[in-house]
Amino acid sequence: MRTPPHAPTGSVTSADRWDHFLARWGVDRAGHRVEPGLYALGDPGRDAPVFVTANYTLSFDALRTAVSGFDCFVLVLDTKGINVWCAAGKGTFGTDELVRRIGLTRLGDVVEGRTVIVPQLGATGVSAQEVERRSGFAVEYGPVRAADIPDYLVTHQGTPEMRRVRFGVSDRLLLVPVELVHVIVPMLASAVALYFAGGWAAAWSAIAAFSAGTVLFPILLPWIPTPDFTTKGLILGAVVAAPFAIARTVGSAGASWWWGPGWGLVHLLGMAPVTAFLALLFTGSTTFTSKSGVAREIRRYTRVLAFAFGAGIVLSVALAVAGARGTT
Image: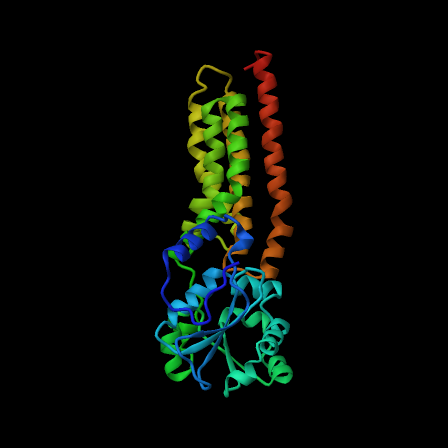
């Protein structure tokens, strides 16, 4: 756990950047933390604003970079090293922890004002009315992005643009490394197993299916024309599987009419559900979805994906048996 000095600056050091790199790649996922407590940025007086953030290093560093040059206080909650948005959903960035931290830091003795500024994405976990009733501090919801804080401080009123949740290509690309790390072991294991079962083409099909779900899907997310992540993943998986299916069909000239198309269908049934399942998992990384929406997708599509993948396995076994008997 990183413990910044009492008066950290807005400057991000090379050590901070290395910490960010490791966090993005999922290395020591639970270790990228800041010690919870109250910190001073610059030389704040008793009338300085108080910002609230999570004790995830990327959240803390984004805030202190954004307010560099301002004299203010930063109240860091114990979110177990989880970012504001996810912690709000899990309950660690919430009313109880905020009230508790205000009391532990004796914030009322440090500042004259009785307002704390909470990130908008933390609003789902924080009840402003309950916080004020229990602590005496009013809650002011700041902008979605830390970068908008300097403009927000001018009027303490959020513009529609400040309130809008954006999840552009650059935001999605930042999530690709950790998504890829989560599947690297099963991807390589599948590729090795398929290499011995069917050669290099089969091995590359596994790599393509996993890569489509973890790399291509976050990039192409808004442009795949269906509302559900799972159906988006099925479409992308089918597109990625198509070259393998076509190659296997064309490469089976001279065999029975059903042999090539059968193996082509195996590629579609095997690859598309893998990509779609990884796309479904990506719902937990995006602001595009809600808990109810994710639950609905899980209920609607999990069995379908399992059935399709199972059918692909059964078909591949049947074709392999047919080939061994020389009936192709």
